[in-house]
Amino acid sequence: MSGGRPLWCLCFLLWFSWALQGCGTQDKRVTGEPAGRRQELVMIALSQLEAPYRAGRGRPSEGFDCSGLVHYVHGSVGIRIPRLAQEQWAAAQPVGKTERQPGDLVFFRIAETKYHVGILVDPGRFVHAPGSGKGVRIAELDTPYWAERYLGAGSFLP
Image 1 (cartoon, rainbow, N blue to C red):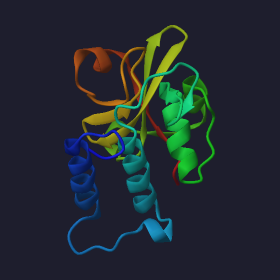
Image 2 (cartoon, rainbow, N blue to C red):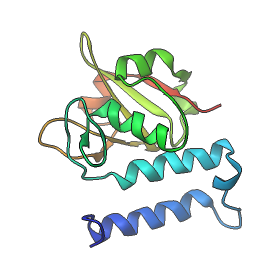
Image 3 (cartoon, rainbow, N blue to C red):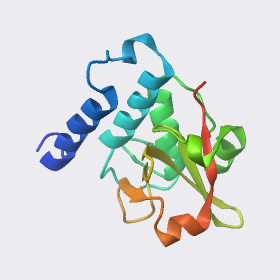
Image 4 (spheres, rainbow, N blue to C red):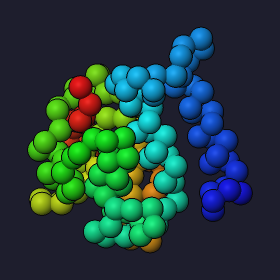
């Protein structure tokens, strides 16, 4: 184990980093191009797997709520976004279901005034801070719970 993360988590992060780079392509993180920034967003989000849920929080040392995780991840790559999920939903550039890419945000309406947000990892999965007693984890978009509450996707990348 390293830094409190299980070995499988670290192996997954290494594999995922390699998979996003593709064979024979250069690492675009240094150029700041959208593909490189998307990869950075996903990698930073995945690095927080198992961090504890804490309402109103948004730092690794404190834990995260859903919008705090998204706010922290974007801030880590120099992108300023609103702090609350409902504000993030209102401010993000809409992304169609067929245009979603890793690093885009996926939004859900849990109740009339309660929103939830996560960061897309691949076409069917997202990273999020689900709630009290549960750490940051990966969830499937097509499970009935999330599919019924899906609002849409958005992005703060060009």
